[in-house]
Length: 261
Image 1 (cartoon, rainbow, N blue to C red):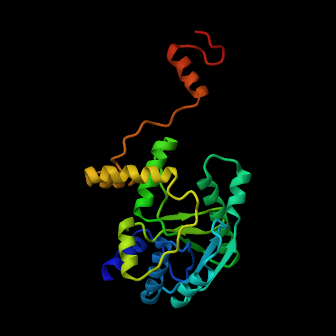
Image 2 (tube, rainbow, N blue to C red):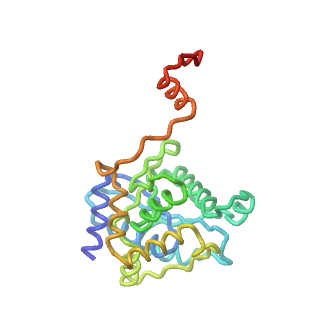
């Protein structure tokens, strides 16, 4: 337990995730990651010299036939964390959006609902259970599917909402969370999402798993590439066509206004 907690403390201290008198709302889905996060933050709260308060909130996506309200309530009661939930009809939102990526639509509406509730109830931070594998997968998805080098940050201030998103589990691998959740006796709920296991993220997850099986150093290298620093040697941003045309005319000795020599 001591080693587990030290990993959470490292993230909190390195990225300044929690300050005195913070009011933190945990996004609790009932999966292994969010259960583990909730348990860890409850433990941190008991031993922290900086007082802060916690709440937990769940989005009923309407994917499952029944919503496990009582199971989540009981879990939070054991940790002395206030719990509540709301309904967001994700299947309906996906049908109306008519976009090829249902995951993006789902994430957009869930994130919006969680941020709205946090703001209405006086929370200043929202804690999400993204772990290190999630960060590396997001980094690779950006490269393979969007042509950009980007991942989520451990701490993300949001100007529009005034909230700050924190991710205290960024120093945990997914397999470590599974192992620790089992040892702690946490019982994750079944994921009701019909797209689970059939997403672009799953493709990246399997690719990384295959590469790591061949050479464990692959994952470490991808992880290192997420860090900003002097190791990055990238081309400059591509100029727009007007800037490029101006440079061409200047190089050929043309007058930029008349386009004549």
